[in-house]
Image 1 (cartoon, one colour):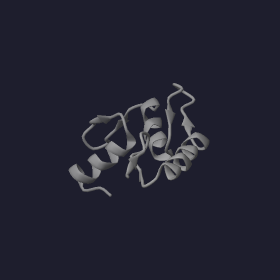
Image 2: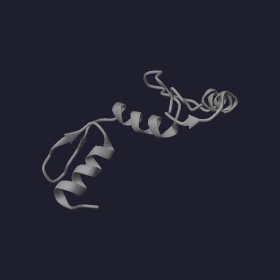
Image 3: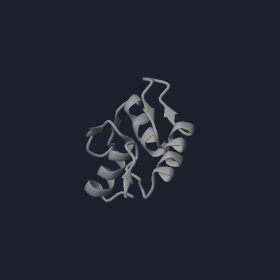
Image 4: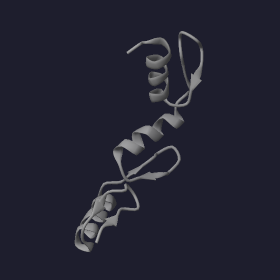
Length: 82
């Protein structure tokens, strides 16, 4: 039987593995100090942190982006900057 984690979509084979996996989420969660939203992965939390930052603006075309990662992707795809 496959069990999919409701927090991170990891799949495990047994209920015992699932219980152990859930303990990891309970032990290692990340709460945003700005809004109190809880994340169960550091990646999700780091991505969320950008929401509370001022918008990032492209210095070439002046487009604005909520996320620094989106600005970086824009610069790479639109302007060839790595």
